[in-house]
Length: 278
Image 1: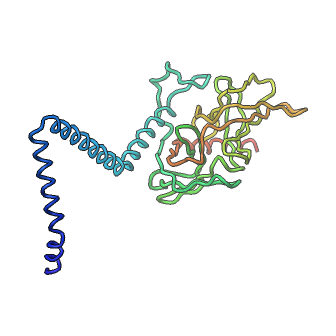
Image 2: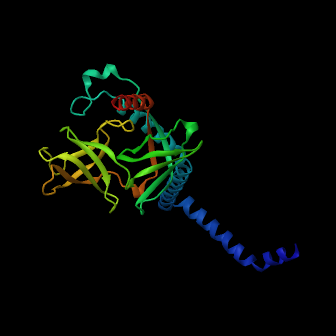
Image 3: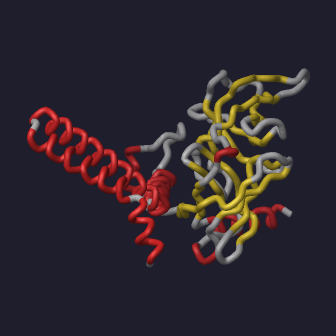
């Protein structure tokens, strides 16, 4: 206690000076209109700055909740879009909107881990069987397809990325009907190939490639990329189309698991047809 008192006595001159400065400042501001206006403006600006920083901090603290809310809303909108009746060209058929049926369920998921620098890349998601996820369901983003779920645990799942040399997706040229299989070239993350498109197909640079809907995994009409090069091997009857992929998987943080509610029915029917042919 004595040391504190001694420190106060040693700094008494400073405290007296500080007190006099505060008194002078108050008197100047109180009895001079111009200084009073400057003080009020400065106070308002400083107060606004503090409020802005406080709001930014509060928004940051609630950022996870906002992202969760937005992902759920996007999942709902994506589900509505996936279940819209399609016309012959792949676009939404407005004359059949009253026939809207729930075929696909969309589950929002956070990306836990994601690899892009191997030949066989995988994506780990924070949704599993207790959220309704099952194997062989599609994984997409707002920009396109990113993978296929292969293994499922109660609270997480592992998807085989489109950046996997064994991933093949049934695709078509939008509004032209030509279809084939798209797969990663093993080079950069945006370089893909679309194969099995016949050489008499009327394709052009810049044409959009999308999911065909012929598989039991993805709905039709999901963006995959655009044609950036058209090749034809000598003696071949099919194009080799270079596709610039629409999704940058190196920046993946959120995804949506697309579950076909009739997948089992489709696969069982296909197995039955194959058994009958044999």
